[in-house]
Length: 269
Image (tube, rainbow, N blue to C red):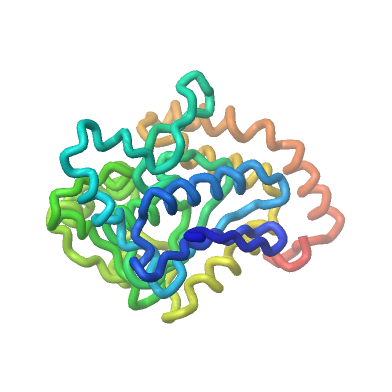
């Protein structure tokens, strides 16, 4: 089995377990990962997911050996990475080589990155909401060497995180981007010691899961929804998304008024 799932209360850890290929993404893995994340999103008991690659590699990208087998195919994109959803389904998602990279989650996902997160693996990491990298981990558009394009969100998400100029240089040169640089330019949000990415990501996930979830998900959705909008349009969108959550906020205000959480104390909320 290339994907396993471990649940610890409100946190679901989804593990890509293909270490013999440095967790390169083949069709079976892509299908299993997509299904695992759809199941997480439907699970009312699970609040935050962590994505981790077993064996010291997050993901070495799309499986080029599988890609080579498609050479000469009339339409390579007919080789689905996970089953096609009927077009009339309002929840339909387009085909993605890397599995979940075109799914839109309603709950946060944290990437726990050890070793390489390169080519499609970098796109998979960028799909996550937050990235925790080990100090010797790295990203990079390694598929530049083989003429394989970024088709799982890399050209969309990387510029939004690090800016167009930096993204263009990283994408066109295909060079290695070490973890320290990823942190400095905004391609990751936390740096940890070697071997600690999963534990650190799961700890962060539990911290997020402690909070009232309707509000957290509304704020997350507003952040994602504001791309491409003017400030006025984005403010209006924020208001539309957030005002239904005011009841939850009023209950929180009542807890504060009763004496909880004073002086920045997050331990008693």
